[in-house]
Amino acid sequence: MIKQILLGGATAVLVTGSASALTMSVNVDNRSVNAFAQAGGDTDSDGAASGGGSVFNESVNASAQSEIFFLNSGGSGGGAGIPDFIGAVANASAGQSSEIGALSISGNGYADASGNHGNILEAITGDADGAGGGGGLAPSDFRSESSSILEVLFSIDEAAAFDLSGFLHAGNEIAVGGSQSDISNVASVILVNADTNESAFKTEISNDSQVLDEQGVLAAGNYKFNVSVAAEVDGVFNELTSSIVLPDNGFGYATSAGFKGVALQLSAIDKPIPEPVTTTLAAMGLGALVLRTSRRRHS
Image (cartoon, rainbow, N blue to C red; front, top):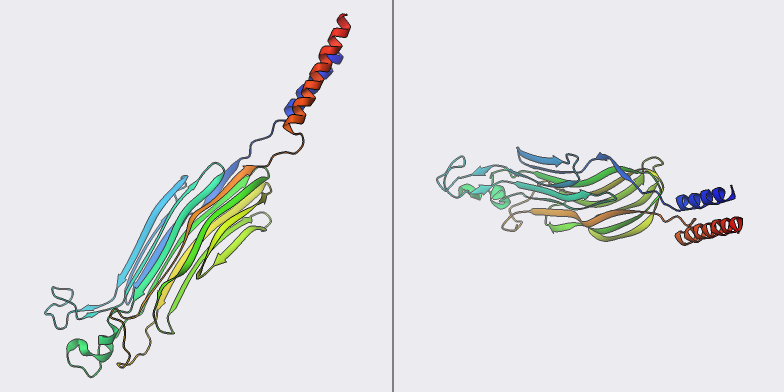
């Protein structure tokens, strides 16, 4: 009877020493890229969203162009010849390459936006038709915006350690424009407990860059991991005069944002009790006691 009890105890010790496996389950996959462009009355847009697979690899582009006039070159309505007046243009693009693993979420993404008012000087002075004296073509406003969003809602069945790494950037490449125009860029990362709304990590930058290097512990439950970058250019034409000297390409604006090598890695937390060595020694001790008891009964 004593032998059976001791053997049962050894088995229980060995079972207790085995750790359960950490599991991450994807609840919602909201990864997407979008681009929009508007110049004068012309608009264009493009977008793509994840279909729910582990890999998402997409890029989108949008481009818009306002009026083009052929006043002196013999062309008309987009015909042959060199245009005398080129209106506003707007361009936007975004892309993302990301992957969801068994215990990880990682990816790269970018968002670019740019635009130009066109040949403003000729439009203001009226020199495009060779007559001079003002009354030229009216320049157009433009707008372009883009975004790349890596958002995954997931759950874990037990507490886990997390390691968050990567690089964020957001800034202006070109910024030559009037006071009424607007340029914005942003890059952000959020890791939040969806059950308690408590943030495990949160950051947002604009016209800056940041290296991500964060570690911590997540309790069992539901979480939202969001990495977002967005770029926007809003070109509003100001009331200029013919005395202002403009660049050859008019007033131009461009900005961008992106994330590179961003990765959220989860790992199981080692249980401090019982430790593997302690468990093994306990099992060996019980086994030896069983053998000793058995020998005594047969001697």
